[in-house]
Length: 248
Image (cartoon, rainbow, N blue to C red; front, top):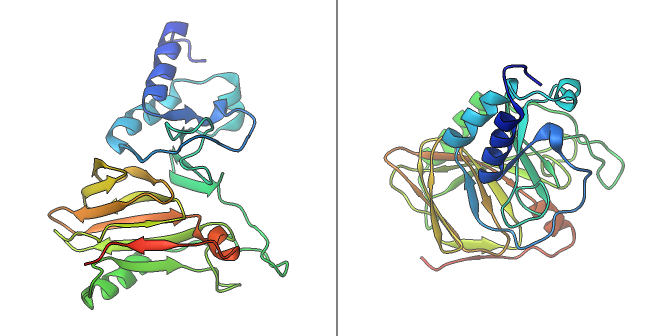
């Protein structure tokens, strides 16, 4: 632990992280499946970033060994360190990481591995711009799904990843689905109405959208671009997926 910090300093820091519904990566307990009524929640980057920067000061022996300066996002409705019951997410010094409840190769049904693959931002962003330029019908949200080049299926066997774009001032139709999602604001700002609550969305904020919960997105003065990570592939595999969209 840094010699410049007292135990009281560390205790205060730990409490601050708890108030932000986060947990230091190096203090993760042994994994157990998270349970409890998940809630709609937004982790504001402006709040979490300041504490993430302080992880360089808050070093215990476990942190020194792990060398992982990360804050795990903990849904306030769950008793485990996960954003939703099936999706783990964390802010770390390299960005935002995700994983089933961090990314690792998995096997598909015929024994092939999901490759470790990089999806360049500029390529995806350009493709999404082209989709958005075509206009839209009843649904103003343009969606670009990341696919596994080996299987042609979702990016991971249990997680789907999509880049979504909403034009400036546009509003998505209210919808809900059996799958849960985690959203990351890549560009722009706006609001998320979810479960009867309204959340402000700013760049790098992360939002949890619980399963079967009505939600709606509104873009601000500029287009809103989001990365959506969803557990829909699990629901699709078992034929359990269901979704609803409110009439236009």
